[in-house]
Image 1 (tube, rainbow, N blue to C red):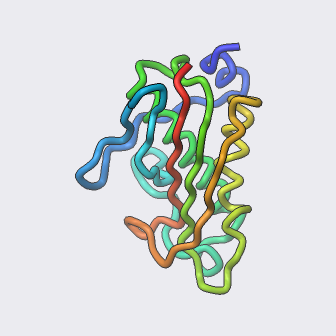
Image 2: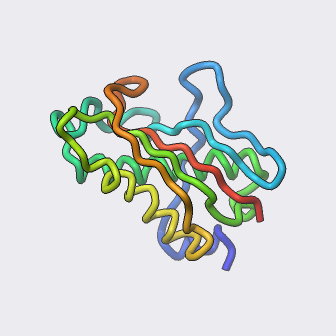
Length: 152
């Protein structure tokens, strides 16, 4: 099944590619891979929340934001690669969670990204991953995700 058909089956519509907030491009194709820049959970051009997970932002909400980040990454990768059906799978996910020092649930938050990529790509969505807690992210976003995709 094509990626576009799978997205339709899941009822997922990819967002427009988020504009960079600094001096970078959303994604770069090199060899057989597409590397995305870190994606924030922009929805309709704005962040749904700001602050730290474990304080202003609940872990379950942050997990949903990580899902949004992954969809934003897929949109950026598809744009760079010439279409979503040119994306064949996922190699690696890097997740960053702005959290209070006592919060240790970063892996659960980044599961939001990993799970949606698994739903979309099946076995080709299995990937290596890092989930890291950080003190602050750009624009005070609670989460940021970067993805390395494999070209089809």
